[in-house]
Amino acid sequence: MNWPACQFRWPAALLVLLLAAPAARALVDDALSFAYEAANPYAERGWIIREDAWGGDLGQGDKKAVTAQLFRGNSYIFFLATDIDGAALRVNIYDAEGNLAENKSWQRGRFAYAEIKPRSTGTYYAIVEIISSPGERTGWALVYGFQRK
Amino acid sequence: MILRLLFVLLLCLGIAHGQKPYKTIDLGQFPAETVDNVVIPVPSEIFTVLDKLGNPNWRGELGPEKNYPASPNRAQVALLLGTVIADGFVAVEAEDSERVKEIGRNVLTLAEVINVRKSVVARSNSIIEKADAREWNAVRREFDGALQDVNQAMLELNDAQLAQLVSLGGWLRGTEVLTSIVKDKYSRDRAELLYQPMLVDYFNRQLDEMSPRLRRLQLVGEIRKSLGRIGPLIKESRPSEISEKTVTEINALATQMVELIRARP
Image 1 (cartoon, each protein chain N blue to C red):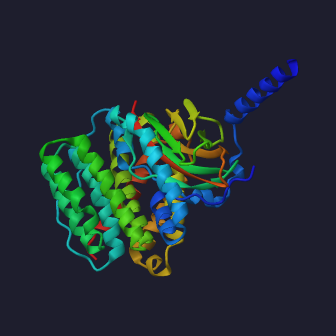
Image 2: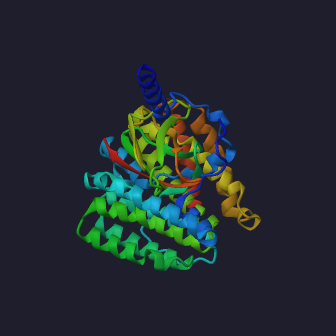
């Protein structure tokens, strides 16, 4: 498996994109709107959704890893979205040993979701993947939230 | 007909396989650059866990009550801003609305020195307003937001390295408080919160990659040295086995670094 080399945080991504391709920016902006749209019902149920987000664009079958420090005692939810109609993507959470660690995940159309209640405090990886897409590049955005549970 | 059914079955199996995550992945195949970009937890993530672990003496953890004068050393101001925002969380836990308001004003003063005042004015006002109303969860969210706003504003000003120092200052002050609370009433559950090897590596890497001008600053050099000592302490144990002695050692290092950050230039 060839893991992609770069992954960037939303504000940095925003800067790069502002200077570069307007089309790519639109892709990620729209993907981000969809990710927040998916997260919104959870915010209404008391989850704290982070205001920053991570994103970029990937080709079909490509993967990216977002590295996160998670704490035992919290529950975490990750929302991945794209603006591309007909694209399918997914997000899965792995622990520092590379074992699948999520409690639940699903993939529906342009949205994907993963939930984890970490069994121990430490480093985890949210692996973002474009399963299929009608476009050559697919913009994606990932947001996450947490709750005491 | 049978062939058609077989085709549909194979298609379904194929789709199911495509959507099923791997049980394990080889993290060794991650290129190093992937790890450069990490999600820094917002302080609320740690404080929500701490809430569950008894009732610490938050008032005892409050930092010194003072207004911070303008310093010509922008790196120190950035680090200080991070520690002050972390202090805001402690004041929220202590439910000390006067202190929260004072911290909200200090955030504004320090943000002005590093040219990001505009980005935190609304947050600062909201912190003061919500502290008056004693809406503690809302105040926490505003402090989280202030940290993110400052970071973003600095990135927009091409001051990414100062933004990193703000995050580092917040993490150091958070670590000082966390270790103090854990050693005050040690348990393995509490100590596990300190297991943050990836963050220590991340901050170390950022300091290593800072411009020579910043790296030459005595304060940055001292922090780099101390942070280099925290890493092995955290990594020598499994998450659930961080000892009381290790907690005390990390606390001493974090306290020393925060004192340096707060010292007058």
